[in-house]
Image (cartoon, rainbow, N blue to C red; front, top):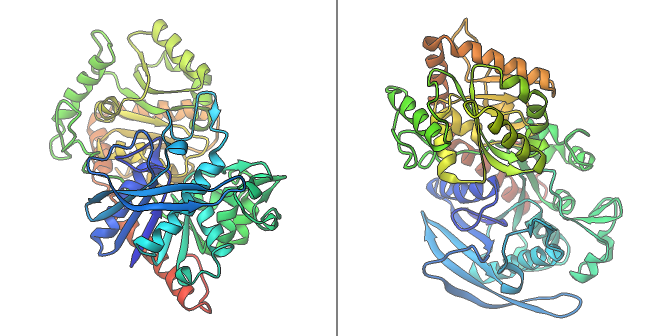
Length: 491
């Protein structure tokens, strides 16, 4: 089967978040399972290609003011995956992928409409897939175009679409006059199509027109069908519930494992945990904690500093946390109030609170290896990757029971010796503090704590199992497109 991925970012070429990790890793797992995979992404200023070759010299994309002409270059094949880059410098040769500190780029609708049309036109030359697998609002016009303006194109007669929601909070909302600008018909501005409180909603368009909808964990697939997590589109998803499913993201253990990690001081494994203590010492040195008490548990944080990630809860209890016997190391940036909170607490408690206001991949690896616990108290979390990384490093997760956090972490039971972490349900500072105290108490019994560590380290969240689930979805979509009488249902 031939699957074409369309997404706005992909490691190692461009990244702002977990979407890039998925689009970089899942295709490799699909190729390993015997499928043909092409990946289409924009060619940004950040995209580094060692041997770029133009494979489609010119694609014409209509807009209501004038045509735009883009090309397609290839970066070659990596692990059997063919990568194609939509090249249009006026739209993609910019400082950042989606916007600056001042906000989103005002022409994002045009940028990603051009990308979507170019993917379809390029595939006519480079190979029409059995299934287009589209990710987030930036590629959401592909299912819309295929079922509207390209509906009579014989090239796409049997091509199906799978659309993956990585975060319902980002929908691609634009004013109504965006439709004629993109030469899309006005009848799409209807409540059962792309209209959303008077605006055009790209994500909604994909939810209406895609053959099948997936999201990145089982729990999140149910949560987004509720008012609390649906961001106004829960009704659309409920109407399509039979074609909505959750498939947990995998992780790349070639990069995220203490047995092979190139960024940590000492390697270690479930059989030999001695390198964990050395990594802890190295982590605290990297954060400038002078003469730390290495017997204290270290709680690590790697995150965007935002309320969605639970930092409002952390702020509620930070003063009380600082009185506990622990050390907190945090890496990230985001909302100014949370950056200032950590900076203030570090000055007040230099032996217990350490922060780096930045994102640094090498330091993130050191935190995973050197921490004893990892904190993720998210308000909502579609999947989450750091809690899965933490399990492999024997760094016990403390999480809120939402989305992928709930799916991946089993509560620790001291009586049975089963479980992989600690989690709470109520979204409150008190619930978070009680759960942290529970973890601190468990840490005092190092014998059982090592059992807890090894429970997590022996878990397998590699991409193989997830890839098999995606293949079942692709097969269902392909069968439905080639035999229209066959009904699509959730798998």
